Image (cartoon, rainbow, N blue to C red):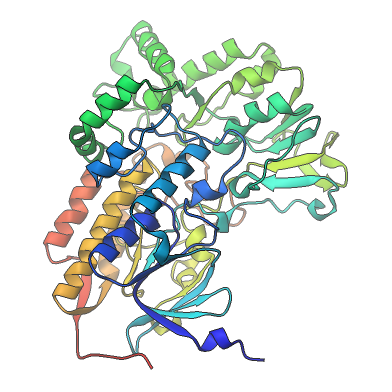
Length: 549
């Protein structure tokens, strides 16, 4: 029997996938410019990753006064954050505030998953298929999926998971109702960002917590604290300067950069610098010196300092040793915590080193390693995502001649984009914070705002100049990808296995898909490309009106 929705075709100027920071701002700008725009969102509300990541302890690792939109002074001044690092519920309230304030919901379709998007060269439009069989047509396809998406959560393929008699959850797709941990034996697999945030909170409620750690992390104290009314008012009064500094900084947060090498100081001087950064909390340690990510000797000074702190905090020397990382500091995603290392001093917490005693299987009663079986009522997978390319490749996106994005990118081995905004063979498709853009190495809403404004200006330019299609040139994207690789190889990032390199996903080809030149230089670069009539893109003029039957 034919699904009647398969015969329904709604046509828009632009379709945006995702209603997080990217989708909300993209919708606002395109709608203000007069483009018919529709946003499709899998969840039942706005928020993107902040809609799904409701695990206990979920908190932002960018300072809240910078973790918001700054395109509107009025919008900025109408919202007040409660503390330095906001928790997930507060961020979600902020995004709902934005959606309501800008009246965005009427053009967002919730509970809707985009299954495929195929480009039709005969009419220069994108055909988009929704999960219920509905067909959509649009001139422009814009992905606002983010670099980490609920579509690409990583649940390791452990033998026996389907036989587990308890309950299991992934931090990136947490239930909306409260999970009762009282009196429960809980196992957390993974000690990345979400694991380190949730472990101290779970430990306070569970009868017993067992942490299954593969790789110890350099976690820094967040130094979170409530904001005073006076501080919030000073921030609002200084809006224009803050907004300028955010866009002109390397990572979207002002005031963190250092101009000194760690090797210029004596050990005693470095100790004082690191102590001050540790006390300040947040990302200060990363920026204590300017060569921590380019010089192995300099990096080791910071790594040794943090290991010494772990040794001071954790009372049991054998546990402290297991918690001390050996890879280069800050080459995995930097993690900020509240009482993470202190949690291992609790009597109801056990640390299991699964690098030395790997997990063999999930049993009906819990988790069995090569050494022991741990009986559990709840398993929490804090195992991250298939990042960067994963969210895009989960959708069947096909460009010219029916070539899929997965085929074009060779499953990750040869990901080529131009500026992280577009990729050849996929006309009129734009990616917000796509692979090979600065994206996650900084305060992401700033990167999003820069991309969204560029895409909006571009689509306006195409309309004003009667341009039918815009497509990245092969040579331009090859040069860009080469440039991104050269930058990455000049740092210590590529020397460490991480989700940045795809190492957390079995079988995923290794590659560092983030532009390391910084937010400010990148933003100036894409603006210059736009001023130069979009150098690196092929613009095809309009050749007569085409109507979709």
